[in-house]
Image (cartoon, rainbow, N blue to C red):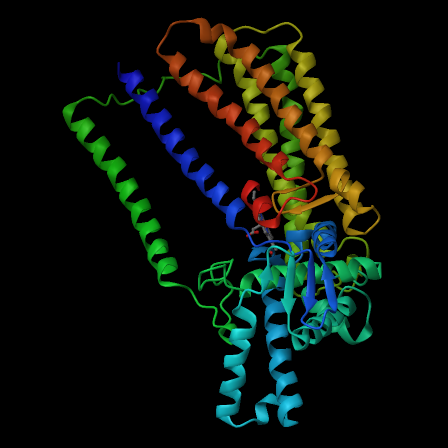
Length: 480
Ligand code: HEM
């Protein structure tokens, strides 16, 4: 009876949480900022095409995506947030441009009321949503077209090797020639423009932008809304109330004497174990865990150093072959790998210990999984390096290179391979624990819960597989 209540509680929590997640996923899909077919001026000059924007997203992913600066606030810290920086540059350019065109002066030289009038014009120009759904055109003024081209030229130089921007690249820990073709530079500009447009333009029929007024940018009146602040406060108050509620519940149960305290065994049960061949086969996993965590910390140290010396390591030109975006990617991915490997190994070690039986060929399964993991770790890291060094086509990059989204940085092939590996692990654990499942003791409930949580590791990883080659950035962020 007591267990039934707990299972019902768990089911209610899961159904409710996934209903909320599902609802908001659907909402993101419904109201995400559209990719226009063309960005075109009122005079008919095409600035960017939709294909360039989509290609630009893939180019950005191949450079390391979130591991080099950020977009919409997600990513790494040394280089700037490209969407916020583009927005600021475009707004500043427009103010200067109008000041020059209309008064033949710099913006700073204008009288305060003229500055105020131009600032007001800027807000109307940039916040008004001029996307025309039937034609698929995002229509902008000719002045804005000039501003976009000017900002684009800056980024084309930045991602190349223009010597005037060498110091800036050093400050951003951005390697020389991060992009190698003009086509890709132009495409990444189109993508950055689009991402910044979504930060500035009001959603249809509303006075907040697609990104809910993020980033804060006074030039275009981007500031947090009242709802934003209230819901942030409500969320942490609810979190604290929930924790308080749990403690309160347990205090009451204990007073009523309904909560039995678990009695620890007199001796550590693991110490008395007689390891089976498959349990012994897991030892090498733990050595790999140690090695990966040491390399992870080394990569963290190198990544941190790039914050000071963007192109080198104490004078050694390390960034030529191991730039920040690579070390940061590896730092994070190795963290995930060693934590996951420790989980897998512990599960595989515990399974026969819990059931007291060694299934046939279990040792072979454990060894097989180990070699699969070694291939995934080595292969995916090499692929990420190839991607960032721009040695892969955009398609190959998607499959084997850098996926661009933090925490799922490995190419689709490696993701699918890892997903499969997690199911092999689940299968091996399940067959190891099966005899214990069949015994009708109270521990069964705990074992089933353990098994469900292990399955969740594999299944949750599957969410990343929902991100396709050209998935909308907002949906990609959701699945990530
Ligand atoms: C001495 C040890 C470590 C050093 C020096 C270090 C250094 C760093 C640096 C420099 C960054 C990148 C910040 C940026 O430029 O964006 C970073 C990010 C990160 N590190 Fe470490 N790290 C260390 C240990 C670890 C460990 C042990 C873990 C986890 C097991 C870890 C997990 C992460 C994660 C998840 C991020 C990304 C955070 C984000 O995107 O907000 N780090 N670390």
